[in-house]
Length: 338
Image 1 (cartoon, rainbow, N blue to C red):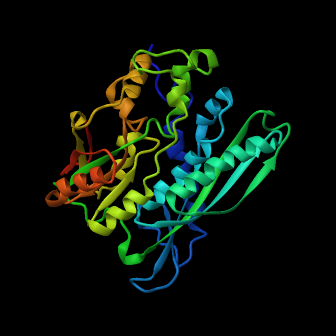
Image 2: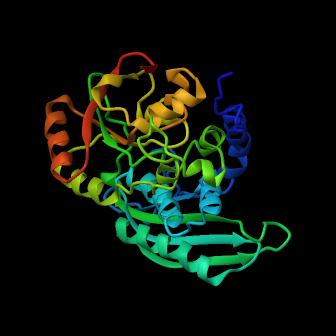
Image 3: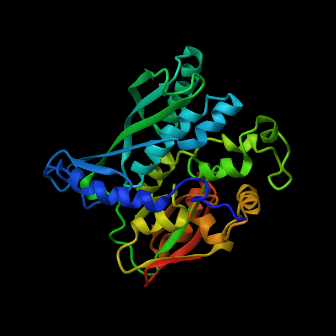
């Protein structure tokens, strides 16, 4: 029997309903400085009324059930990178430079050495993103978390000029989609990954021929942080839209930057699919569409650009040490064609 995200315990439709239900309460808190109609990956708060005035962009996120592998493998020095990445990659999608980061770590029993390893990862992520780790909270919650388990979440704030915000509004039919390679699964889809690879330490350290390595070697690979690459790129090219490929994969995230009435076509043969995703699909036995609606499928960021500069953008990214590909285009009807 095929194993998909819902059967692994994650109901995406319930998440959509939750957002719909909470919307009216959230909007009650808005004042004139909240720019609610801009972008989709970060929250905007204008600092003044000028067209070229500064605007704060904020984002918050956690690492999800990827944490289970940190527990099983007793490796805690990279999970903090994921916490940073999930926040800063979102706000840089709007063209904002991350300024600061705060973390929250909750655990059943405070183990100073383990906390230090977690924060080591957070600090490394902040260095990669060029932002400051200015504080946080470490909570000890016996009876709520098991002694050897914890949760981590983060909060990031960036800044961008209002007239420099990247929000996808100028995207038009025919624009090209540029994909930048991911470092692996990143931090989404792990409820399904855990069902597929399991949580037994011995099994995780057993060689998998499809992967070409052990699952343990890939399940804790940190989420790639794209901040410095994107900030450099947007200074050189007019990037119209940027999508961070997280939960919901291609199918949910790329349309978030596409104007109403338009859709996207993805050429799946335009880039090499990493063996990791082949292995996951082989074990799960699920169709391509569900894979592209759960995982990043080897692409962590997608940029929308004018066709005239697409080749130059790809070349520039590759020169920066990224692996970039032209993976599709914007079409004149809504939806995602794979």
